[in-house]
Image (cartoon, rainbow, N blue to C red; front, side):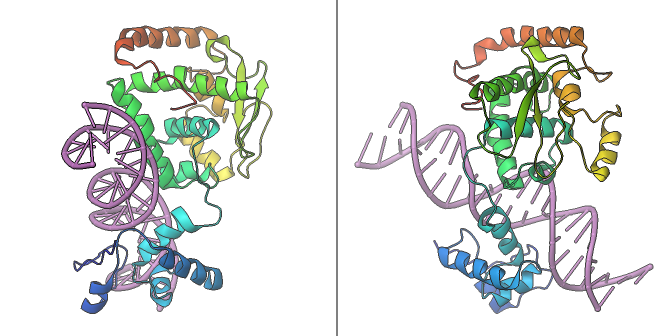
Length: 272
DNA sequence: AAATGCGTCAACCGCGATCAC
DNA sequence: CGTGATCGCGGTTGACGCATT
């Protein structure tokens, strides 16, 4: 499909193209030939300076379009395929902390792009929120994610015995931080992604991020899972009582909402 | 077989941040 | 310091394929 639009393409280019260039600018899906041209150029000259890159590579695309194509599709380290349960879990957790900071979340999932994660969130997670007839940002939905979906994902990850890939590792921990959801045992998912991993469940963050974290979470602890997932109480780890009370609240609501949920909706991990 | 609905995801857009001169 | 160029992010759109009617 040739999509050569006559209208101005404002994206990215602060230097207005001439009328002739403007007419020639392509939009829409990339062809194999264009992909090849872009890969070839970048392998020889490197990336960056996207507008001039687009011109010099002979591509009738905006620099912005080239950048997007490279980052989201052509880069050699782009991971493709289904989002694994480990990745789902990480996305849910990180989104609960950072909100729609897709690029920041993507940084924690090697090979995944912000676009992919954003699409995943919109198509899968928001769909389920819709089925539950609640807003994706509502406390109800967040609680369901926290106390039902994430534990189930953890269960499934634990049950399969090993990670689908070597990006994440998880381990069972005894005691320490976190009261454990439903007393089903404490599973700690630790980030690898080039960062250090600790046995006790804390993600060791880079200094800069740690500072930011201190601002975001009133607690000075960086114990990610024990604080924000396993224990709903921000006052500390291991408050079993508050875990159970919170869970039962969710459970009651859940029972009430059961009629609107299809049987297979909660086949978490297979199709979230 | 055709029409319609729906989910997915690549690509686009606007805008604020950052960089370079 | 001001200004234009470029980058990067998040929101949105639309094409495509599959399922259902």
